[in-house]
Length: 359
Image (tube, rainbow, N blue to C red; front, top):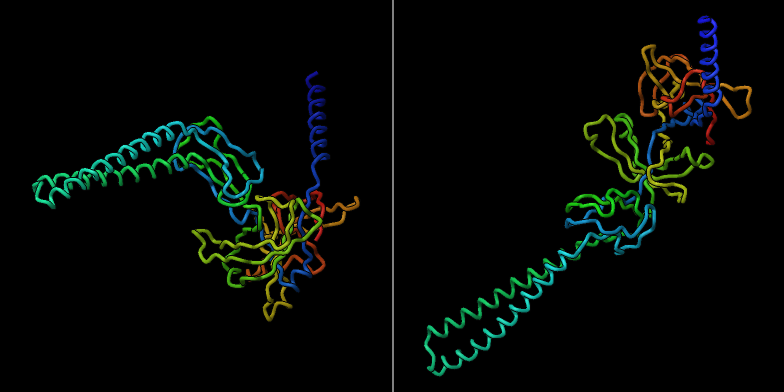
């Protein structure tokens, strides 16, 4: 009996496994023909889109977050109030300081009248010097108190105004960090605010590439979620410090505007570099297309399957040569007839079904 139960369980497990395998999504991949890589000197890098301006907004004063006037992703005009903390205490303090200022103004007015009167008496020798100096000191003291009250009123007014979070530029809320009715401190981020204008692409390039990159260089950008179009970009900023890493930051301005491109989208950047004099004698592929494990260096090449539009990823071991500005030189393992997968190798395995993204 146990024998038959074991057989049934085994068949059930095999059946579940085959169902999972049959329902696995066909993964879209970026690819490159070896002949194009060797001739054109192309390199591909992973990147991510971001707004040209993105800032964390916070209040300059603490309090209870009373209301956020806009929803996530909603457009906000410059100088509009985005959110407010409870202002009751700050308003009371402002009114109190305002009353003190008015009282100081009355004191100055009264002291000035007394000073003017004693000044005339002193000029006609009808008041002593000590009386004159005493009234004069009182007048100067009243003016100093008024000046202090004016400064305190200005500070109280600022504190009251700081209970409102103002949009620094036209943009939209990309992330809400704090919640309404939550007690927050001064300087604590409440939300992320992004500009709605130009989109940038941030990427990292290795040290052997950075010297070949130039400001104004044209690049091609592909988004996995917008697979039917290639976008153009221009290198706008080049980092000259690694920040402790082995790669250098690069900022690319996206020249083709598209409302479907949102901040945080992953993409692949294709850059073309001048070939070395002996490049036509070498087979060179992008470094991102090479994976490594305990069995050595390998790539995934694309093979045609029986299904229309579907291909098979096949692992192929390679012998690597020098890492150049355009990629790895291949000593052995590939030919110019091969087509390789250039991104997302961590999701690949030998025999996986893939679909080619439009180039």
